[in-house]
Image (cartoon, rainbow, N blue to C red):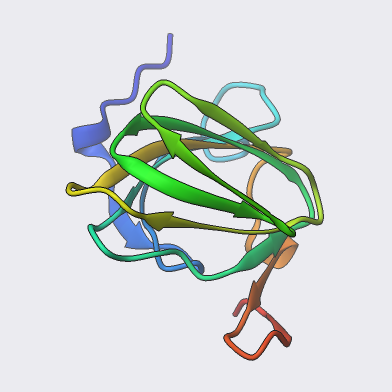
Length: 129
């Protein structure tokens, strides 16, 4: 049985600028699965950097309110909502609420730095290093 406590997970800043705590990641635990699962936080008034993943991703909003951007679409999101992000989509999320925006990120197959491209402010892309 594998049980991970969020409080025991190391915190780091992802390539998109969100604060992540990785709960599960294929290849980093002694169990077989394809995906990765992380808890993300975007502070009040902040947003993640636009980025593109070669893999599919799902956000599940735990708390807060955000404005989700996927390619040319934008929509408000809030607690108890799931957002599917297709592979190859340019995406970012803005915290538009009064508190931290917290959500789970499920990436399948598991997140890998080489599968992520960060898009800078002028619209050009650069590989995340």
